[in-house]
Length: 301
Image (cartoon, rainbow, N blue to C red; front, side, top):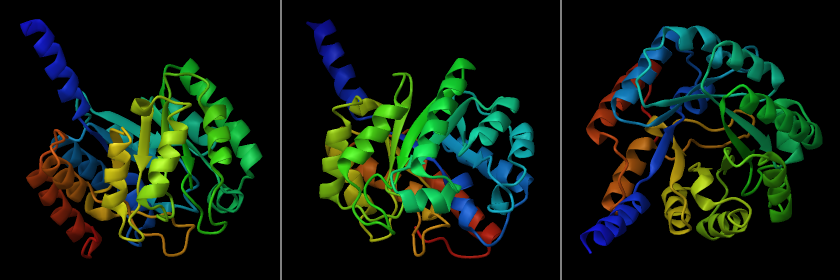
């Protein structure tokens, strides 16, 4: 009986564990007018890892002319003090970005395709059809090289330019990307247009293709519904979320797109609801204050 009770307790406890990925060093900094040195970016990531964040998106390999804030990501990675047990990842939007990630021995890559044709052209300069084919090849290449992959859909809950995105379109992209069950699948509310009802609908439909415990959701707070959408995703079984220190972020190719749900507010909300994150909230507040000083402005979250 004691063994059965312990197994039941372990199952309940595992259901209350939420895994946060800090995306401030990439999604947050890429929209900032002040560009940090790669040394400052490395120190920021080290400080974030020290708070207990289990996953950190450290940057991206993209055209530095389009996104100068992400220049020298390779140099930054090489000088970064890596914390054992922390998953470090980069965003790669094309094959060239993946090649750079492989050359730098980055352990995990994130490969996203937009469900919006217009956003795809503005964000990556590629049609949806072309982007999807390239992403599928990239996923195969990454897995063959022993690299972890998150394959995701941007604008999964709607598009600033095109409005509602048909769920069939999202499902088709997920099915195409999810060629191997070792892949984590991401759903991003890129413009921040989702509401709790839409979050529930999309997660439940995608959950019929992909086990919900493999889904990671990224929420933006454009309409002030970020934490409400977080609760809706939690109630649908999602336990992986992307967040950003200070609520920084927002797609630079979408006018008016606000930042991600803030890491510190998310940790506070989750802990108050009885979930466990393993993240030091006081430590986050300290990092937030230091980052605000570096950027020369108050942070929004």
